[in-house]
Image (cartoon, rainbow, N blue to C red):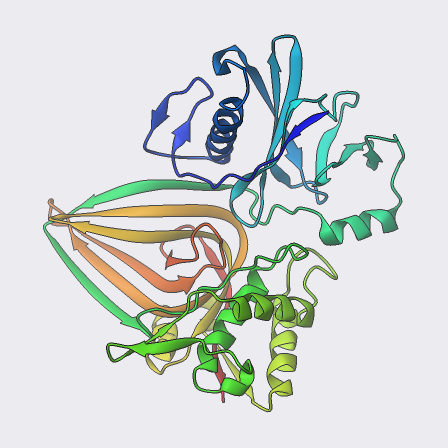
Length: 389
């Protein structure tokens, strides 16, 4: 078997396998196609192969929880066949395997293609997991063990794109705890579904400025031009995310971290440092109280939000127009909040549009910080203002 393995950064463009390129990306399929096309062009350029002669077919693959993880791309050219795997690795799509000469590992089975790790393929048939190489049916305990270290699709689907708001007037009411806040995200190979530990790490990183004993030896930022600016990421932050992952028991009972497990893990971590932690809910009667959340931020207290579905925006201002670059995901998630932004546009027809945001550390590798749009079709299950003292 001839193996070529590479990792490719995700680009926010739409690419068809025929080679047409535009500036807008929408949908998981387009994201994966972009990554695959870039990898194929890079690898084929080193081989004596004409890219136009390669015929490609795409099939979905799933993680061990049977959530779509990405796609397998099947290639045929010059009487040869190969395949590539493009999967979701911590909120962005990357190539994990690329073979110019290799048989499709799932070819002999008709079920759901499950990808566990490099060179480890399963198929889900008749309510059973079957190892494709041996044909053995896996036992429940084996599945649990594999699941602890398997690739996992932390977001089942997302979309990126752009929106332009044309206006004759614009008013921005905002408040920031700091001009540059922590924006840590999980990078560990043996952790998955770690958005909640990452959110907790961002909260602890913020308070470490005031209480260095929270993370001994870690200097989370520095004063520059009279402002305290946090490091957006550091090796110590990476270790902190991993520590909280185990403190919170992430993925032990079910994929992810419950709100109760988050609090338990944070309580345990902070207690070991000799400090105390306090939680004030910003939800009332099951609904998010934006005014109260803004008040707590103005008091110098960061937030954690547990949400279902979200849109993250970034702003680009020009004369009489504002471009919004956004990412939308339809899944449960957790993020840390460090400010707010209420933007009121007066449109050309005289009507007003009000966009309300929380400035967040997203916990996402592909977009570590941005503005969480609370006007989007989203549910805020819980929000806490968290004070460590």
